[in-house]
Amino acid sequence: MKLDQTIDAAELRQRAEERLQNQAFPADTSLSAHETQRQLQELQIHQIELEMQNEELRQTRQKLEISQARYFVSTTWHLWVM
Image (cartoon, rainbow, N blue to C red; front, side, top):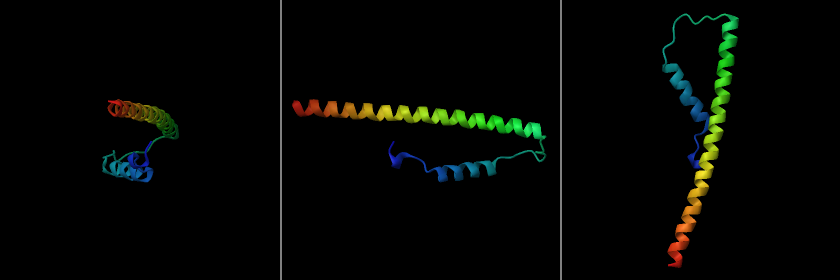
């Protein structure tokens, strides 16, 4: 993946924090220890799912870039031979 096409992790985090600050939450956010643990586990699972999806997207993008490069070389070769 090309570096100029990636979003800086720090910038992405800052944007996410800004969105979080702009969201409205209920005034009473006190949770039991059990509920807090359950929500933490849900967030961890969701994070892993997102990491897996991100890896699939990176692999797909890499395959696409390779395919585009092959097409370009093939097209250029045919134009050069003619």
